Image 1 (spheres, one colour):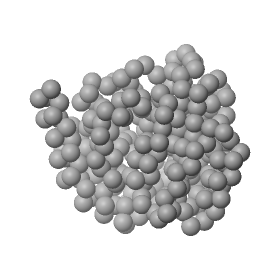
Image 2 (cartoon, helix red, strand yellow):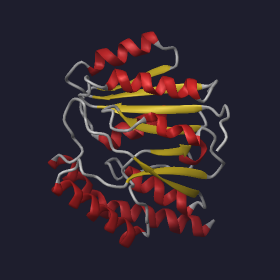
Image 3 (tube, rainbow, N blue to C red):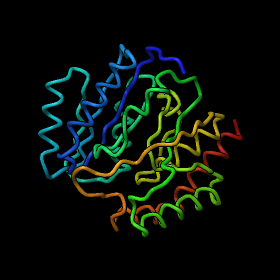
Image 4 (cartoon, helix red, strand yellow):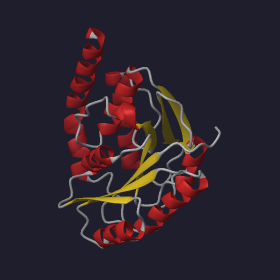
Amino acid sequence: MEHASQSWSIVIFSYNEEGTLRSVIESVQRFFETIACINSEIILVDDGSTDKCGEIVRAAAQDFPNVKAVCHSTNLGIGYALRSGYAAVQFENVSAVPGDGQFNVAELIPYASLPEKTFVSFYRKENTIYTRGRNVLSLINRKLNANLLGLKVRDVNWVKIYKRVELERLHMRMKSSLVESEICAKLLMGKNTIIECESVYHPRKAGKSKGASLPVVLQAALETLKLVCVVNLYRMTRRKH
């Protein structure tokens, strides 16, 4: 795809990622420079970190005029962090990347200019970093998405690129990590085209993984039924219109 100066909002969500957060912020700024993005912003979501993330966020907001800070007073989880970030964006293309540095922001470059009603879903082809237990959970998640929602996306929990105008139409309901499943299912119902792109899942250079913690897994499991109801209600509402 040709590069063009479409506007971009990138959300960086973090919880206790003091070892990598600043480098991720700088990599996003390099991405904006590479694609010659005139209108850009970074939404830094600090999800109640207890390390120095808060200091890093405040410093970045002072160092860069296009940085906006969103801080949770307590840790609310990835679903809330994503929703807080998405609610704060103002530009055309929207992507949320983790502050742990495991996604290479340069992978966004080929999609600097994205057609209307199109979204990009990056997928991790081989996940040798995950534990066996977490890989099993990921497999179960994919099966549930396919069988209960008809959502056949290779890696619904990895990085995406959305059109802001499409996100605003969805009226998101999920508050757990299942919010990305809700978004993708609704976008596909809305006749959006999905582009799936292989991505490299880089090893951590610092910090510890939080995605497979017991509270996160339990919350997602409890909300699966709610997700099915939310998506089916959305489907019925669309049929009426």
